[in-house]
Image 1 (tube, rainbow, N blue to C red):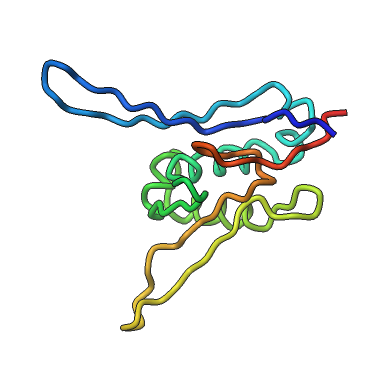
Image 2 (image 1 turned 60 degrees about the vertical axis):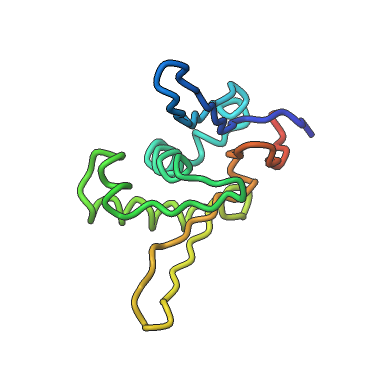
Length: 138
C-alpha cells in the first residue's frame, strides 16, 4: 500500500515589514496520485469541489465551521443548491467510509449553532502536520 499523500492543505503566514501586518493563507494542494488512485473519479466533480470548499475552513483537527452562505458563495450556487451538494457529500463513501462528518448541535438555549464539518483522514485532505490515510494507487 502506498504511503503517498494525495492532497494536502498548507498554510503560509506572510509578514509585511512595512506595515507590520500578518496574513495567513491556506492552500489545497492536489497530488497526481489522487487521480491515479481513483478517488476523484469515484467522488465526482461536485463532491470534490464541495469537499475542497469546506476544507478551506479547516483547522488543525480537521474541523470546519463555514456557514451555508459561505459554502454557497464559494461554490457559486444558491444556498439551497449548496445544501443539496453538502448532503450528497456527507452521504458519499470511499471504500465504504465517509470522507466528512457533519455535526449539528443546539446551544443550551435551543438555538441551532453553526454546523461543524470534520474532514476525515480517508478524504486525503489534511492540514499542518495531520496525517492522511494511505490509499492503494494500483
